[in-house]
Image (cartoon, rainbow, N blue to C red):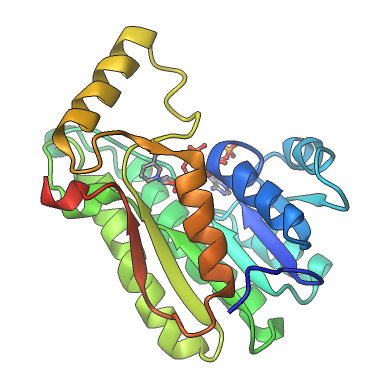
Length: 239
Ligand SMILES: NC(=O)c1ccc[n+]([C@@H]2O[C@H](COP(=O)([O-])OP(=O)(O)OC[C@H]3O[C@@H](n4cnc5c(N)ncnc54)[C@H](OP(=O)(O)O)[C@@H]3O)[C@@H](O)[C@H]2O)c1
């Protein structure tokens, strides 16, 4: 096993910011031709312009036509990482049908469509990395949709691993990660969240972006790992 991605093409869906951009950056450092996919094609191209040799493309995994168009445009890619998420964190009594469907489209149906359109031209050495999340294993009122969709990601990885073999399919399940996605919260709320998590999990801290980047890029090159969910959450499931 090597972490060398030289000469491979790595498509990062949801790659224009936060964890996706960090994974795209590491992949480029490891020698990959990186393609950043984002709902906003301009944002994808702007992010790609920060990486050597990268390109950006519009992909909205809730819109199959954009997935099909990207697959036709890009041709064979070696690896796909999908970070798309559309959380709908409300009590079950307050569920909105369309937002619930979109949450499943982003995390589950979207990856199936990526597999449908890209896998036929991926090489046997190719792989797909999906993004789950610790909420799947920690039921909590108001987090049912996030938990169920993240749990379904894990089953999506194992089922796709069987059907697409020898293409490998795995998932990363992050815990609370200081990825940038929490930056919109008021500072005091974010600090309280992070302190609470740090104080309640074995690792004693929230995750760093590098924790997730390490796991995701390892999975791209871990040639004997398929159908797995790698938990990168500081032991949070046992907390
Ligand atoms: N950070 C954490 O604490 C944490 C914890 C557990 C799990 N995770 C999971 O890790 C992944 C990355 O999280 P993050 O922290 O980097 O947060 P994030 O920025 O919210 O990541 C989600 C990414 O998905 C993209 N996206 C959303 N809908 C999409 C769609 N329909 N098609 C294509 N792309 C779409 C977003 O881009 P645009 O909105 O710009 O289109 C964004 O780049 C997510 O799946 C998240 O659920 C994160």
